[in-house]
Length: 116
Length: 153
Image (spheres, rainbow over the protein chains, first blue to last red):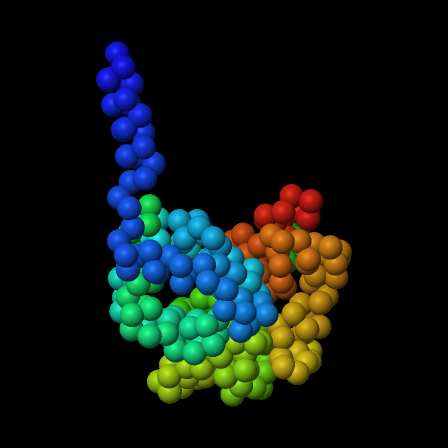
């Protein structure tokens, strides 16, 4: 009986911590939450995309709904390289205040692919 | 009698026609993707030709964002807006920089909306047509189909 409940606990904990993020994805997660404070209305990625990339966001100025960034919530994400580069180009300049590096972009995409 | 019925039918259908503003059939894909990501791809008839031209010539400073287009998209979208723009006389001045929400037509159509609704977090901005006009993406702007129940007619 005791071993059964331990097994149950193990299963629950496995489920809630499903697949820990890889180191690149962890860096991507930190970047996603980082406050750059370059832009008053968009101090961080989360200003439009919310703290949870699994949820839809809202454009900080226009109010338009933004579909989730996480691939598990939105299968379209990161499927069109030209679109990905376009939005990194615009949003990095606007929010980070400079172009993002290739590593930053790779980490960001890793996080969005892995987060569940 | 028949003509009277026809007239009545016309009177009933006219206001609803004005509430239908689907994107023209020849709308280039670039307009929908480039001008429909941060805000709705607005019906081109809501701004006059000269105001669209002013908007397109200052995309590097587009309401606080750099919305610069590549030359091909810029040309394609410019031509589209030029041929599909609205009647300047009916729209009235759009201000500087031109805003659809500053045209006399827009103001007249929304004059009954209290200021607090514009500030509602669900609305956020007059740019957010879809917050109230839930069919806006398909060109439906009827005042009978408003997403926020308190504002429905």
